[in-house]
Image (cartoon, rainbow, N blue to C red):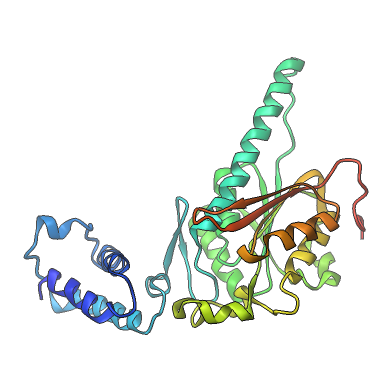
Length: 315
């Protein structure tokens, strides 16, 4: 069958569910993944014909797309910043908003490094180097945040937690594929009595998290390919206590972040001010709320003020 005919079939079968541009993206990603063909191939070879063997994976992918299974799960891969990650239904599909959160951290680290270098130069002490950054990712899922940070900050010590062993299996594999060294731990941030098992006797410069934050009341408005296929454990919280993870993370941050350390959070766009108030109640300072590329309140940064006793430090 002609490749252009298969493209037309994709549009005919998926047109009632997805917009044209998204169907084009599905088709081109499939031919790149399964056939190693560039997206411009039809412009160069409009009469390109595939064998039955070459057609088969494309039609199998189409069948799953019709059931609204996410393409990333079908292909088993997702892109995050400059990384390629393995994904399956045990983990959320990495999203561009989360890339923005990582980029914010990298910008702040670069700014801090510049300040340190400036002070070092002024002091004339060329032997002074700050200790390696220590970073904790809570609810790591696919490992996208931890791996991106480890890749861009190769001298940092990166730790990552998740309550799901299946998610940790994916994250460990992604760390191996991307050749970064991360310490992964199975643990539940909502169960603080498990803290001694974390091997986290150190304090952190940075804690980052993209925890579950979608309220049950918001589920109805979500796309089927998200709510029916991505892990509910990583998505949803109760309407009665939608900030339960943020409260636990804030408390943990006040015990395990260094003075001047930063807490970075991805948040529910409808609960930005409420989450900001929660961090203020935990005595964080310099709280900053940022919008994502779509104009939604999506990220928060907060700092542990210097000179303020940590809540329960040393427990």
